[in-house]
Image (cartoon, rainbow, N blue to C red; front, side, top):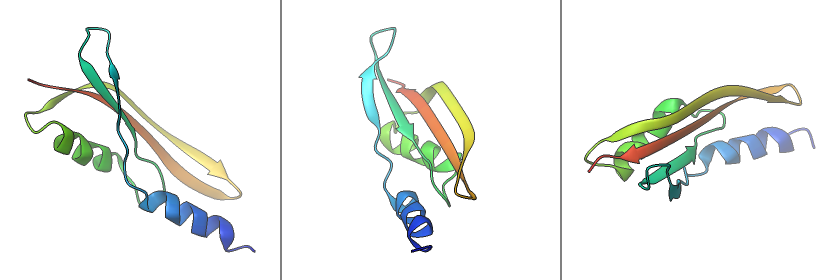
Length: 85
């Protein structure tokens, strides 16, 4: 039973990054993505941003924090970007 939590954390780390698109304040599309889990870094968000925006992007918002549960500390990253035309 003790192995369940580490296994679930491992699965969360392996999940792909799923950007969510929404309209930003200037009317352009902004992509928000969460790159959290063991083994994930903010670089994973940047790599996904480069895939979404091959012409480059501007960072709209960035957040880094640490979440702890059951003695396990997991990094938590969020990145919001707007693609350059």
